[in-house]
Image (cartoon, rainbow, N blue to C red; front, side, top):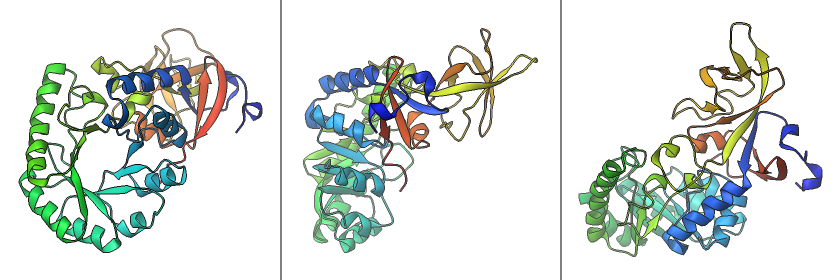
Length: 336
């Protein structure tokens, strides 16, 4: 879309609307690029799901990207951002992944079954995914070497290992977060000693400067941040909100905005609504106790605790420079 086809002012866009602050976005991108330049960062596109943002990351020198779904890999490749894509997840359809022929793609594997499936589909490069404390995918660290040998015997190139210290990234106390990260990455380094390869991939926004074991960090949420990471005193600013309209004011003391569960990721807790107190929410509504008078038609800003699932609920992201809408970016990596 062109600026000419858009409402010019933030107050004119229909609500609920996903809004990114362009100044904050650029500040966060540059801050991270200074800390982790070039291929030290493999940005995770699952956080923003927008190739427009990925293109900005690539312009800053980050040419390798982390993806969570085959859909993300497909769209990134089609957008010309496929220099080095890592699907950091096990999937049930490696044939679809192998059919993407305009990108370098590395797949995560963590078992005999996923290695067999990836090799049979024609996947060429893999990382051995190691479970290092977060109860998701990943093999036992002691089994990583055997799996790497199996993968190589099946004709796959093993680039190295990956592991995610997801149980550490949101720990508020920095010392505890650091110690938990160290314990996790020691496991990953032990697995890497058995596997070999040039790549040790892992990390996230919460541990971007604490994880010194990995050769590349898979941070994603730093681009626009969210309420949960905002508690960690990281050098990134909150730059995403849902623009909402007050649609009801009760004589009993509460008010209601037109943004509910269908527009917000609620897995990490209740969002903030300006400086008001949220006490109830449902499919299409957020109910709050105003800290100052509000009226029907007033605009409120709702900031999510977790941006990833919030963004995934929207098909577009309005880009704001102050009160002006300067662009609209499709959230073009939604779906699977």
